[in-house]
Length: 261
Length: 218
Image 1 (cartoon, rainbow over the protein chains, first blue to last red):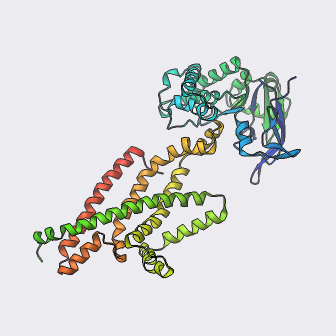
Image 2 (cartoon, rainbow over the protein chains, first blue to last red; image 1 turned 120 degrees about the vertical axis):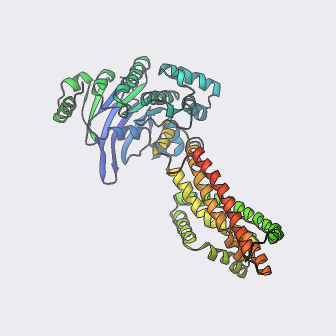
């Protein structure tokens, strides 16, 4: 088995008095597609945001691609990471947000080319050629000149995926990327992600409430509740034969709400 | 009392001199307010509590006291401490400091108006903080600030008659001196009103255009 690309080791996180992660530990193999499911407030989005360094941790360690995320070696021990270290680590990770967070003052094409030009020094023409390929892949090559406000939610989210891919991260984080979409627009985004999962060997972590999609997409499912992992396993096992009572109760509610799992 | 056109023509050149000074004071005061506001806004965002709270207290102090009192301090009391300023310089500094505390609030609102998601997306795109400011935050924060800033500068313009109290020869001061000299107040004061009204109306039309172009803050 290859060395894990992500190692989360006894990570705890609180927001004020609220404990959101409780000694959380898990590892992710390179190329693995992981679905994080569980009730709201269970900490699944928080761990994604922590991996993107949008939040810090209170205790524990995280290693990404063999290096500590929030620490760096110093004088034989570990010191808190400085901004330069974080900047270097962020280059390995891309994220797609629930609310898209496209840059509204930039065209679709500029949204995709901005980061490669600024952070990797890619020449504008090369960045634009690569961006057009990515936009073509998400089916939006004809919208390159459009502004984000002119797009539907599903189109915005596909642009956001192209934007994250433009930096060629080793790890992609998808944070409830279809939760803000009208139901009829969900499928176009999921299709792009399916293709991505099939055609690339990128490691992907997906926080979702779409159980049917998690079932098809993931190699492994982590069920979160109250800040820790209650149960994990292959999707067939988790969705059809969950062992833990809390997983069973959660899936029952989801099915009662009319979702396929 | 009868309106005298010949008196109007006689005093018009003097009043126009005053208009010129009024406009100069407004422009210089606005420029200074833009810079002062930026420093106040940055200092208040600082992690250093002495800097952020100290600036906050100072800004509250300036906003909570009348501009006229501040002008008196700058022009009549600073010379006792060894710093003598010309009337126009003292007036410009007074306007700039006073309105700088208001423009600081405009900057703050403009920056906070950009959603947290934009910062997060910039980070996820691995932009450095200066790159995020330059390419993501400021281009979104500045346009809605422009009408709000223009609004304060129009307000500043209408407060420039206060500068007459520290002997700046702006419109009000010129009008008062020709009026006192001739014992005729009707024409000079009417003209002062007309000048302010015309320039205000033109400015407000410009402001509305800015609001249509850039949107409103809020």
